[in-house]
Length: 185
Image 1 (cartoon, rainbow, N blue to C red):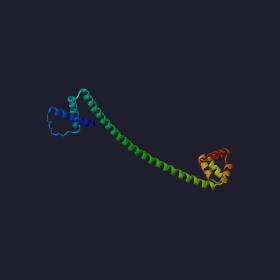
Image 2: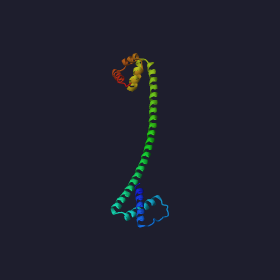
Image 3: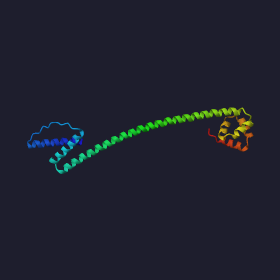
Image 4: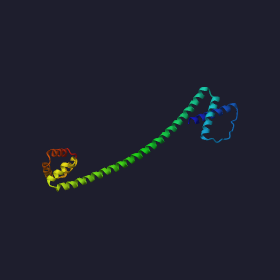
């Protein structure tokens, strides 16, 4: 943008200077340049015209403007490149999040299935123990893991549970009763 303003000013100045000297403007055959060649040629021409027409302070100012414009263009390219990198990283992160959620759902599904199966097995053992005599049930529950025994006891008839506790060793009975009371429901 600054280049266009400077070029317009320079062409105006050169037209006026040519007019003032009485010279006719020369017709130059158009040449085809690449963008890089055009920018370089334009910069050289601007510097040459400024050196001829203006003082050194204006020339330095114009050159600093051109340098700043180049710096801004490089910074804009860097910003665009970083934006693309961020978008790519964001896309990859979203993909990984989706994969993680899928794995999480599968694990939760497995845990739910295991809990259902465990519940079915506990219900089966409850049916078996409820068919036993209280003395036999007391022996079986006394040697079981206390968490399993508490789950079984929680599903038995309270009258049968009281008979089982009465037939158990007092320490085991007390431990199971305490676990039963503190059981998370």
